[in-house]
Image (cartoon, rainbow, N blue to C red; front, side, top):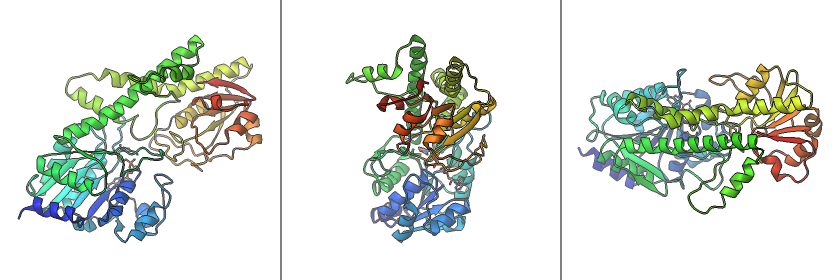
Amino acid sequence: MDHHAELLGKIDRREACVAVLGLGYVGLPLVRAFARAGLPTIGFDIDQNKIDALNAGRDYLQHPAPGLAKELLCSGRFGATSDPKDLTHADALLVCVPTPLDDNREPDLSYVERTIDTIASVLTPGRLVILESTTYPGTTRDIVLPRLERANLRCGRDVFVAFSPEREDPGSPGRSTRSIPKLVGGIDDASTQLATALYRTAIETVVPVSCAEVAEAAKLLENVYRSVNIALVNEMKLILEKLGIDPLEVIDAAATKPFGFQRFDPGPGLGGHCIPIDPYYLAWRARQAGIDARFIELAGEINCAMPAHVVARLEEALRQRASTIDNADVLVLGLAYKKNIDDVRESPSAEIIRLLKGANARVAYSDPHIAKTHPGRRTDLAMQSVELTPERLARADAVIIATDHDAFDWDMVAAHARLIVDTRGKMRTVADVRGEVVSA
Ligand SMILES: NC(=O)c1ccc[n+]([C@@H]2O[C@H](COP(=O)([O-])OP(=O)(O)OC[C@H]3O[C@@H](n4cnc5c(N)ncnc54)[C@H](O)[C@@H]3O)[C@@H](O)[C@H]2O)c1
């Protein structure tokens, strides 16, 4: 039987059933994109709470989109499950599980391996398996493929395997899974062709590349590019602050150049599941090949040092007021790693809070998107968001602006905070600031 032609026909007729494994920030919008395109879809996750929520039409992530669970439920083209047996109905299986770092800051592919083993246990001929989790070049061919071929199926003939990186931009309006161009690289040409055809049902622009390794490496280049440029503006900020020059005014000025300069803004450090982590996947792979990824390591070093810089700026400002951080009441605005989202993964705010607590400050946070903290992989802050009121602001010895959520009342902050450590340049946009502002 010609499995390739059969699957291509099913995709063209929009009859191919798409299973998305891992229903988090990446998997959920992806499964919705295929359901919207009219394909039958399955959502698979090992977290039964998520499955129950989806089958009840209940959202568990504020972002990517409120109402997503209900939309899926009402589409009549979606079912959520944690039972691997249900995956036997799937023609295409898309893997969107975490790819964190281990304690040695090296790739932890255990989630990917476990998910691929689940797929292998139900795999039959004529299926397409696509890895979407960010990883180092070679993962799809060296880690995924052998585990699938253990099921006595040959790639390119019985099963088809590709890599297609995810480029979600959480919290940015105007961009969606459908509108962001999608790279696709297969283990062989047949796999690239099938994966390209599949994504074209749901995504406006699909860009096939010559192989899985190109797609894997392109994703890492995109994230290394961001990490290095953010480190550059963060270093620039440290230098300019010391020279008494306003870093943001310098960046505004440089950004008037219409070519050869792309604007990046400094901040309290890096956050999210991508930029602080993915570059180390490439650095690890480079080390295996005998190359020292110096740019990546240096950028990581500079960006990771930013929370300590913020706390140092606060200490300096308190000292100038004949005060100390010991027992100071510090209110941190924003726990999410970037504005207008509820994602706290690797958030610099958590590190700032940890450092403040270590210095014996009395710390509270306010974040309209995160009512309370949950135990993370490395930290358990065990805190609840406080309501932002004029009284609470006035009571604080210092307010640190860590995340510039639009939902904050910035005029109120400017009117009532006595000392503001501003890591986002937010107070530059407010006309009347009563207290002292320290940029950091
Ligand atoms: N969040 C982003 O903005 C973003 C952007 C681009 C790429 N990525 C990449 O996409 C991948 C997924 O990231 P995410 O942010 O969606 O993660 P997430 O933590 O939000 O979601 C991952 C989901 O996978 C599930 N899971 C874990 N093990 C599983 C298994 N064995 N079988 C099935 N499900 C399992 C978890 O329960 C969770 O629901 C990562 O590689 C990440 O680097 C993320």
